[in-house]
Amino acid sequence: MDYIKIIILAIIVNNIILSQFLGICSFLGVTGKVSTAIGMGAAVTFVISMGNAITHLIQTYILIPYHIEFLQTITFIFVVAFLVQIVEIIVKKSVPTLYQALGIYLPLITTNCATLAVALLAVQNHYNLVQSVVYAIAIGIGYTLAMVLMAGIREQMEINGYPKGMRGFPMTLVIGSLLAMAFMGFSGLVK
Amino acid sequence: MLKPILRPGKEESMSNLKHFTNGIIKENPTFVLVLGTCPVLAITTTGFNGFGMGMATAMVLVLSNIFISILKNYIPDKVRIAVFITIIATCVSVVELVMKAFTPDLYKALGIFIPLIVVNCLVLGRAEAFAQKKGVFASALDGLGMGIGFTISLTLISIVREILGNGSFFTIPIIPAGAHPMLLFILPPGAFLTFGLLFAVMNALKRKFKI
Image (cartoon, rainbow over all chains, first blue to last red; front, side, top):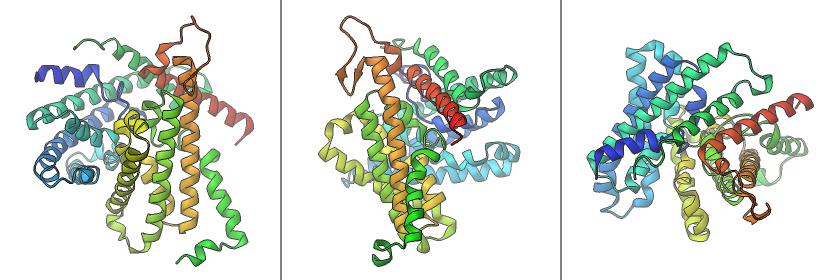
């Protein structure tokens, strides 16, 4: 299969946040500032690309040969939790300010639907090891793109006034709707 | 073990009712706690999908709350998240297999979002905030209340989206022939828009009635 096709599909056409609705919690939660959004994007990209490599090996060499595919969900979530723990330790030691800014959302990458979903989707699409990792990295880039766009718009929105009832989540969701509409323009780009 | 569960005192049953209703309005998982928003946006395209997803999540919530509450004294504090996730993942696998066997159409429609109940922050959130501290019966009620609250909000959003986007109500067509529904509402942007506007309406209602 064409790698460029996988990459374009994952970043733009099937953007993980804006057209597949995965990782919405962090999309609503940590998009207050552009710098935080970039940090979160990088952390998620690392976790899903490592995670996809490991889960692919587990799926091919353990789950399928022993016919225990029904344990998929449990084993995959363990791999993700393990990786998140590693990322948390690294970020805490090397970039303490980012660690502070991400707060609860860093350990919550474990329960970020994007991480588990990407592993499951890669298995569903029958990608091989390299395709699976390329797919994960592209998804990570798409995730970061959506997060940064949202954070930029929200930083601007803080300056403007809008109705009281719309403050907070409602406004963020409406902005998300406009972004999703913009990304819909890309559908049909790859056949 | 069952005795104290089946015979709650009068005082306790009063507060149990509160645990139950808490999740439906006052701490509605979607509109107040804003947990588990991925399925809220993704699968609310038809009323049946929304309702089915809500029920599946409710089942997982009740099961995981019960098991975590039973085991709470044996789980070491340091590894509790890992243990909770394992318990939740087991419950989700059970629900997944049950749905695959009995409601194959719904299973196909919801697709990847069924295994993703594991990473629904709502389930882990209730385990952490409620089940690991309270009794088995109260935890079960809390899970049920939260599950029903989640189902109600999912169904509400699905109904709005289905009527506007598909012109039908639980697959029964309601708009006159010849009129075009607004397709946008069953596409991704419509999900964000419906949720955002309903959220704003809920905020306005809450302020008006001071809930």
